[in-house]
Amino acid sequence: MAILESIGLDQTLFVQFAIFFVTYFFVNQLVFKPYNKAYEERIKKTSGNQDLAEQAIQQTKVLELEYEKKARLINTEFKSIYDASKTEALHEYDRLVNEARENAKKTLEANRKKIASELDKAKLDLGKEVPVVSNTIVAKLLGKEKTT
Image (cartoon, rainbow, N blue to C red; front, side, top):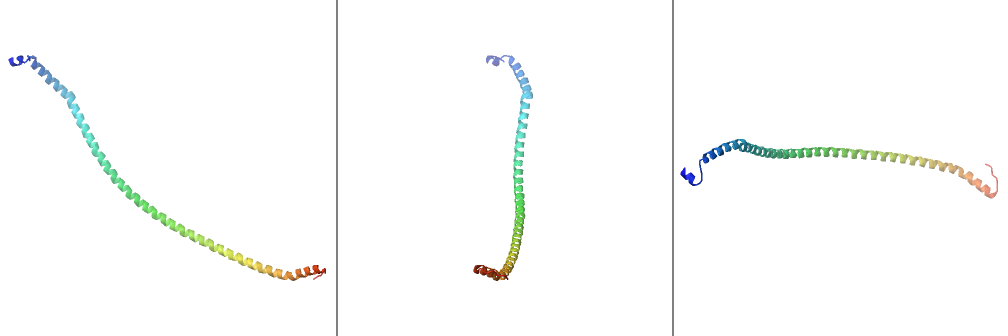
């Protein structure tokens, strides 16, 4: 003890150590252990969340690739259906246009025949009337009244 008193320490040193250890025990139990526990849980959750995030990213990539494959497949099917419908529509269009041309050709030919027959009939009628009209004109020019 003499050594302790020579450096300025007295008998309260043991009491101070006792108070320190009791205080350390309570502070350790009430502050440090809950803090460490919360810290470890936070680390566990964040590292767990990182793992979950990485898994979600991987699943997203897999689903994206699957979506692209399905979209391409549907696009291919749609294109084939569209092309088939377009081809069918073009054939139908060609058929209708050709049918309309044939009808127009038949109608035109029938009208030409009708016009030709009416023209021939008109020529015959005029051919019959030409002598009568010419005699009438000649008679008027000559001043004669002719009755036929």
